[in-house]
Image 1 (tube, rainbow, N blue to C red):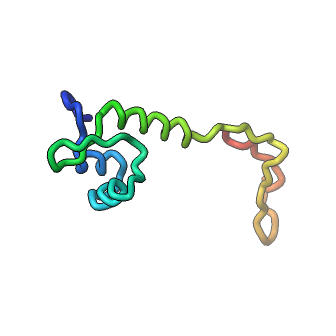
Image 2 (image 1 turned 90 degrees about the vertical axis):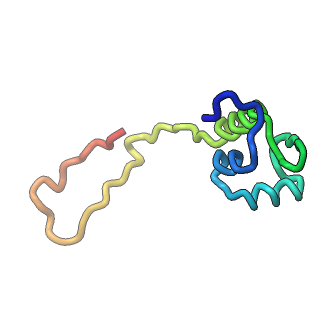
Length: 95
């Protein structure tokens, strides 16, 4: 995504995290950023390695575990009115 770069600017951080530059600056001022900042001149930057570590932990935490659902717990909702032909057949769930 960012070839031959060592540090990421605030624009690039906002692009990666899906936020705005002003939000990133506010988080920096309140010291609520989850990664280590490097301040070169007047620019706030983050090491690309530090950002990759943060994204790895974020992805590993947010991936939900897949739990198989037993077939007996699936309820088939029946429609109102007169039953149609084939309405009493049980359809196996698509997994």
